[in-house]
Amino acid sequence: LDAFPKTLEDVRVQTATGGLVSLLAWCVIAVLVVYEVSSFLTPERHVELKVDVSRGEVMRVNLDIDFPGINCEVLGVDALDATGNVQLEIQNNLYKTKLDSSGKPLRHQASRRPAERKRALPPPAASYSPLPPDYCGDCYGAASAAKNGCCNSCDEVRAAYEARGWILLELENVEQCLREGLHSNITNRLRPGEGCNIKGFIEVSKVQGNFHISPGHTFDYHGRHLHDMSAFADARLDVSHTIHHLSFGDSFPGVTHPLDGVSKKARGDVDLGMYEYFIEIVPTTFKGRFSSKRLKTNQYSVTEFFRSSDPNKGGRFLPGVFFVYDLSPILIEVEERRRSFFHFLVQLCAIIGGVYSVSGMVDSSIYHIPRILRKQRLNKTL
Image (cartoon, rainbow, N blue to C red; front, side, top):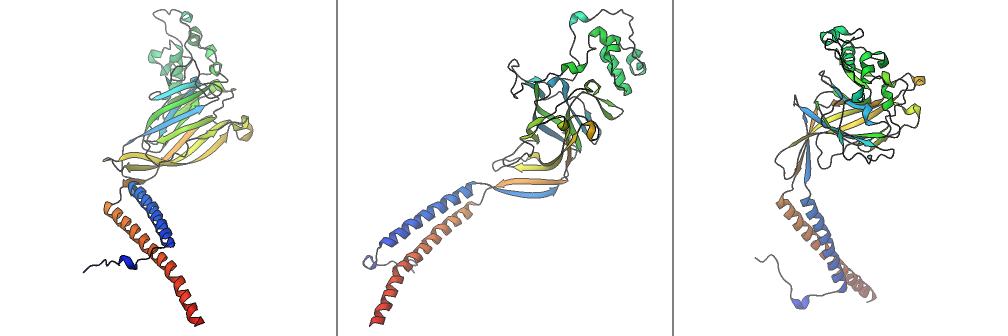
């Protein structure tokens, strides 16, 4: 019943070629075993495609973008979506860092500062004049949109104009702005050689929409998103940028973000204008090997387009960086799975047994073939 018969020690023959074949066999077994162990320890990724049935969710957009050619005071982030939700000059969870001409944070700025609304610099306290108790400032034609029909400050005049959908062009003709010292053109705040880094995240509804970073003042008028660029009519606005990071949701191992590292630099006036990135977002869930919960996140693909603001090439466009996104109806489920331990044992047995058998056949062939050929030559000579 012994399935493993043994040969006598006296009839065994040990050769140098047999030792060499054995050594090579053990080397091959060691390499294959190491590879198999590595494969066993590396989780397999199982991917499934399903229809995304989620509704009413909020999506986080993480961003980290440098603007080396324009300073922080005139930049702002706005977000709009297909449901009509509008976020103007977003401040929450965004930080602006002033940069020098080489793209490094300015030395006198010790830390990042929260994003602020794009408004005029406050004047010195001494420039304010006391107002009589019954003072009612002129709204310059927009009194119907002002509270009590009075505009007692420059900001109130601006708010009344925005409520009417008008643009306040000449601040030097507004008494309130003159009194508060806000009549100087906002272009005085453009500082050549100073840039800006915008970093943080914004939260948007999980529907089609866009968010953009642009100079100027933005406001909403009867559901229309308007940009007041009158203060920059003759200014050269360079929105060259470097996207260090842009993602929609949390990252997971192996995910790629196509816009990370993308840099656009204006080489002259012909490259000034609107940069547009059209993004297709694919909802994704990820479950790690040792995790019991699924991570809800997103992947995306992107195409880009540029519109020049050169009047000789079709007119002026709003300068800025626009991210227009849409969502795919397909949900990708990614799950890491570990291979079966019994499958691993079967593979090890197959490696050792297979290499041992093949090496035995090779050694036997090397030993017997020369002897068979020698015997045939002897038979021919006889």
